[in-house]
Length: 270
Image (cartoon, rainbow, N blue to C red; front, side):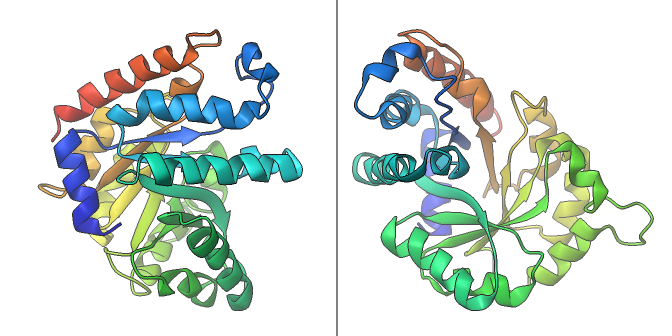
């Protein structure tokens, strides 16, 4: 998916919501456990219910990989279902890969050629040769971790003992590896007040923003400091607050209601 296509989808649907798919067999509605593939069925119903209110889906690969071969099968089925039934939705493989060049090349082939994801999250801390293999695929996006929403982000990314915190250095160096048509950055909503400084360095790149919802981040603050005029430049991810909005047979309807509420708020910024 190109940048222009993504922006067009956002403006047409008046939402920049990304629904994160984090299936936990211990949390999904118990009636689904009778299904042949409970994980896929959980994801399928959520996808169908929330698709009208989002422009992107983000399967978190760890939540599939935890169940071994059957989980990987569920992940492949989920991704294929999205690509077949919702081809205009941006599909992010939240895999947080990154290794020496030849290994990164294989990761990229797995997610771009085999699974046909539009984007993959990548850890940049092994440097350019671990990231550039992901950037060799036309029409695909690499989403680099920059300033994450977790509490431990302060251990390295926000080291105030340095003149230039690590996340700023990552942004300044890595933006030369690609461009705003094939690279995005992860910036957590719980660090929304720092988005002004992020935008000083990467004013036109799209940001994937987790942390709104269950983690307590503010959509209003994210938009105030991070939104790009005309191009929007944001994909705001919500996972738990949407996919676990209900635990009964009406779980998908409740997820849809939560997604619609978020989308309605987002529409005021478009």
